[in-house]
Length: 226
Ligand code: MN
Image (cartoon, rainbow, N blue to C red):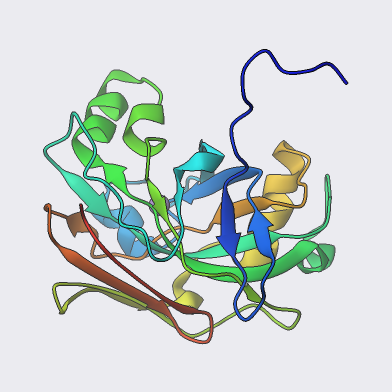
């Protein structure tokens, strides 16, 4: 292999609960509008299928670090999400085989520059600056998981006040369907993370806000907007 002309970027990692070895992040895919009440609050169409967008792998903010408030926005929003960590490769996988690809689950927040997203939507432009910015994917440790997907509550509070509180049963597409659909668009590989969408109650964050999130049975995350 050729030597590098510049130092290669470090591999972004997420800790694995109870283990010394970390999970190396390859790619971050995200599902848009996967809960009916959130789709309605965003003005979405109930008949449209969910869709994917992505964040760069180095957008992850592992536990113990605080995300920086991003530049060029006046309306940073929180979106609490169940995150799927992929541990085996798979392309064009059927839903009934999709769970075999899963390494585990984590709790993530899809931070969003809502003002830039609204402008992009209105102009028919891409969402990269609204979704894929530095520090836009705070995440908990990954919990290894080999049984049926989590089915409990998903919650987020800001400064102790509950903002989002729903159940994973409210997802329009379930975990198996999301992994299957993603695998038809991309060849999934170990290290991929899939953010599975957020329930209703998204809202703005300010510098200094304390954000706490939980997915029942999966874990918790907490950070302060720096
Ligand atoms: Mn989201």
